[in-house]
Length: 116
Length: 114
Image (cartoon, rainbow over all chains, first blue to last red; front, side):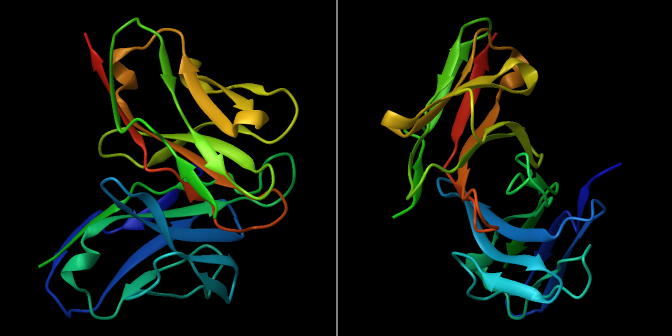
């Protein structure tokens, strides 16, 4: 089944304790992205990656890191989490090609993070 | 500045009634346009998308949307709402010619009264 998976789905942690949220897609998509969703703000892009070893900042990159060593994986790293990073996080990927594939994103199920 | 607005934060409709969710965008050129739905506790699912051609596009679950260039709008409609349509709906825009960031609206929460 074609899908984007995220782990963990739920995470409660404390301020300053490094954590990683994994994202993996099995559709051979080049483009991957991380968003955070907060009430009233919709989805805001954190980082995106156009291909292996190519990453770039989105709208709200502060406090986050990413890496893209393999095409299928795009982990999100919080080196020193703070309470303002409590949010719902989504990973997404996009296929290549024409006919409307560009920017049609497939989303993971989300990771709800709470930083105490 | 590029932006997407969804004027209605929350809408309540009765089951069987018609539905229209509004979306307006500000963008340098005509973008790709999308509607996504997020059911409670779920990720986002693509409902429909517009790239070119016929300005009325059909999507899944009986939804349709109409692109109006003159109004920079892409409103979502459904003729008869079902209780299972209760969810959060997001309008989004993205560029046609590159992998660039997709901009999402703030969302409209839909409640359905039996």
